[in-house]
Length: 445
Figure 1 (cartoon, rainbow, N blue to C red):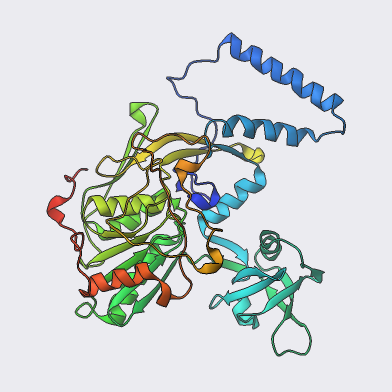
Figure 2 (figure 1 turned 90 degrees about the vertical axis):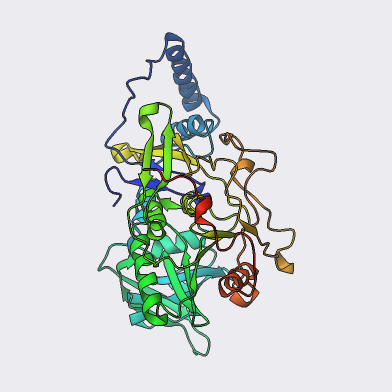
């Protein structure tokens, strides 16, 4: 469930929506003027055209789809991130931001038109029922899913808690398909993963900003400190690559994890009284250990808030390539059973008063990650500035925002991670590491 008045930032993977305020209905600003007579005449024209299409088009159109398309046409003409969410899309958005859903607990991909299990999540129904990494799901409740999209297959596997589902699985070495009955349960999305690199560096991968992210980060840092010990621990690498964004309050909390004081981010709307400022509270969970943030063209929105705050305060060194450049703010307005309106209402700014919109965050140390041969020519650098109809940021330039969004699956091939670890261990030197706190922006509240 989305919390009342909750704020959401989402990034490139879902069209890069931004700060979202959830309210109980349409709020009309006191400074907004009523529509003029000419506007109502235009609406009358719309009504006439709708009637003509409904009654005369060569095939009978679905009226609900016509109206939904017209609404979306109006909103998308404003910018790429304003849109209408029907009831299904709004429900999906709430599931994504909560980080919890009724399901099985497996990470899947598509291979040879079948759903392949990448990994069952520990202590979930799928893991307990015996689903293994590498299994191919061929049927769901007896229905073949060959040719079904991955999204459709995932939707079929999700459902109400305590309801059964039967998976038919093809497993290497098995003589015949295996049928496994699983009872759905509440699944918590792992937005934070962590490990210890070579016994002395904490690696924390934040892949989304949902309601579970700060708790996951706190657990990761405490676990790393306990496993390695503060005396031996040299620092942390925080991986925000391919992270499209999420909840604003989680981006603020993640930034606050590493900061003792100062402004984290501000948002500014059409009117001066709509400005909001979010400041850090005392306490650095890492105990002041060195921090390097990894970033690439897939780092958007909430990720850019974290990177921008830590960069401006000289708390962390940013390594990688330029981020997506998603710096606009949307408000989500529920429309009851009819879904919700997502409307761009503001821009956000880093502590140094930088607008990310169409510009992105430039890393302190630029480290390119080469594409493998099979992806050469197939993956292009994209960012907010390349989106048609995007809001032009006040710091946007000809170079634009974004970069290649690729992270190699094997850490041995990850040049950005290797560079970061070499910096922390002192095997490489760069003027940007460690950052100089004396050059940080003035502390603000």
